Length: 226
Ligand code: ADP
Ligand code: ADP
Image (cartoon, rainbow, N blue to C red; front, side, top):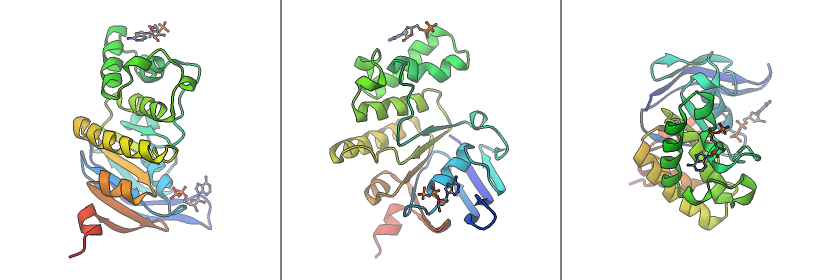
């Protein structure tokens, strides 16, 4: 797992609108941070700047001791899970999860072993031959998570991954995600507008309001005032 340090990070999509004013924050290695705030406050922008899917307008981002703000996404050691899963529809579950390993040139035997371990962890062993269209929403989200963790990234980024699921499944997936984090220990940044997710998943909650950090503390400190 890797530390993530943002120093003076700003974002403006155009000259008039500053979405993130200078932001300084350190996310410690192995911690699960939930970024919480109303729609439009800059949560996705923050996540995408860490992932490298949006450029910073100013400032520096250091991940695991390396300045990454000018690096391509694939060189940042981050993996991202999106709300809409973003799976390859024509590929099997196995191939979806294995894709990045194959691109990186990993030998077939090791790929099969890694995909098997991840599929086991996520309860997908019986579905490896199916296409995404033959899966439930929860199964699809597990595949998306599998695809993200299979390379053992130091940083795991989630953009409202549970928003498309029904209430029961959201609950089950929260439990699974907490368990997964205990097992793999990646530094995790999880964007949501759901307070229950924040309270149950976070080591620390980062509350954003109009791009500014309003609070950054443990759920206990934020929700249980003495
Ligand atoms: P959240 O994830 O909290 O809903 P976003 O990071 O998506 O917020 O958006 C923050 C602000 O930036 C919003 O006002 C949004 O309209 C604006 N914004 C997001 N993406 C773009 C873009 N590509 N171009 C211009 N403005 C954008
Ligand atoms: P390619 O045929 O493009 O070289 P691979 O060598 O990765 O692809 O694997 C061949 C096929 O075998 C893949 O399409 C993959 O779906 C399947 N496959 C390999 N191992 C397993 C496994 N343990 N479970 C299910 N399918 C597997």
